[in-house]
Image 1 (cartoon, helix red, strand yellow):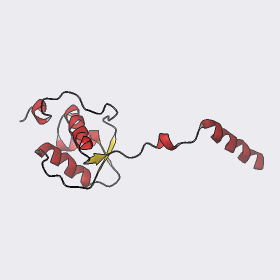
Image 2 (tube, rainbow, N blue to C red):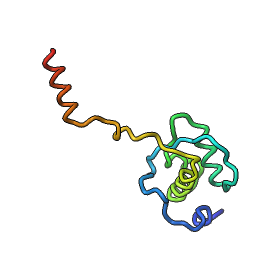
Image 3 (tube, rainbow, N blue to C red):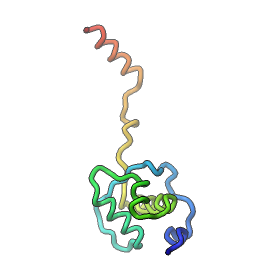
Image 4 (cartoon, one colour):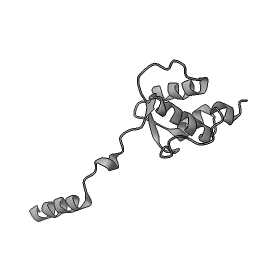
Length: 109
């Protein structure tokens, strides 16, 4: 049994506070040279899934503490090995535009 702080290199917090247990991650392409065993395990799991995998699911499959997996995932994201899907909220139109469109559609009916 390896202690969680050994797996994370002694770190207690992830480098990306926006990454949470429900966050989806996608495997990026590129070499995985020089990665530690736990990082390679996370990356291999993410590479085997299309459409993304939740951090909590990675923790469950690898039977590692979720807090440890968060740190490992952030390490891989910092190295360019993992990414997250684009947040749909950033691309949404303003609510005023949607209301105008709705009024226009209702007027046509």
